[in-house]
Every structure is written in C-alpha cells, then in structure tokens.
Length: 120
Ligand SMILES: *[C@@H]1O[C@H](CO)[C@@H](O)[C@H](O)[C@H]1NC(C)=O
Ligand SMILES: [Cu+2]
Image (cartoon, rainbow, N blue to C red; front, side, top):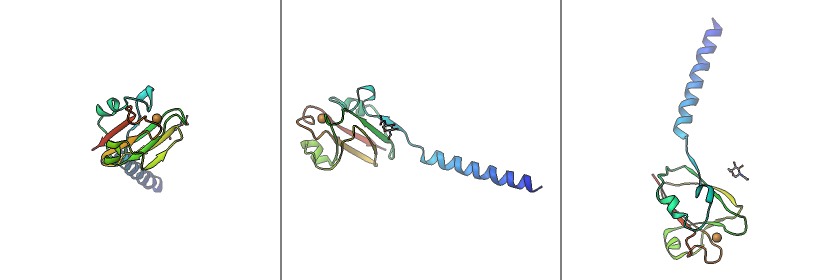
C-alpha cells in the first residue's frame, strides 16, 4: 500500500528531473575541432548554429595563444580588451546574440585568430 505511493511519488520526481534536464540541455563544442583554437578558426564558427548557453571549449598550447572575450568594436580592430582566458583549455558559455573572441598575443588576431559565434 505505502510501497505503491512511494513508488508513484518516486516516478513523478524522476519525470520532473527528466523534464528539467531537457530544458537546460546545452551542447558543447571543441572550437576548431581537432585543429583547436588556431588561425582561420572563423570558418569553423561560421557554419555552426549555436544556442545561448552552449559551451565552447578553447584548446591551444598554453602561452602560445590566449582567448580574449571582446566587444564588436574591439573584435573589428583586434584590440585585446576584455576578459582574458589563458589555461589552454578554456570553457565559455555563449550568451544570446553575437559573441566575439580574439587571440590577444602578438599579431595573431590580425592574422586570423578571431571568431564570432552567434547564439540563437
Ligand atoms: C578541458 O576542459 C574540459 C571541460 O572543462 C574538461 O572536461 C577536460 O577534462 C579538460 N581537459 C584537460 C586536458 O584538462
Ligand atoms: Cu594567438
């Protein structure tokens, strides 16, 4: 008797958790796939459809590159002004709309280590 009620409540809890899981499910992407965060990476980003909350994982040799989260003006002008990540294995959740990333080391941004990821 009590066993059946407990079981029913248990089932409801499982179903609620399952629904929550579906709503918050996000994708994660390794930026540039096997090439990683490197020159020409925008061609990787341009063909992908991201959702707000998706996780981007930036992989690169630590010290060789970094990842600076910039605004559009600084993206266009390769000004490395913004939150800077430098572990070589950096994870960033996308906000809705355009997200701009550049490498702040040397002339790498001007040489094509920059990327816009648009999240819907
Ligand atoms: C890189 O980061 C991801 C996600 O934060 C983690 O799962 C993975 O183990 C890390 N890899 C290395 C080599 O640190
Ligand atoms: Cu770089």
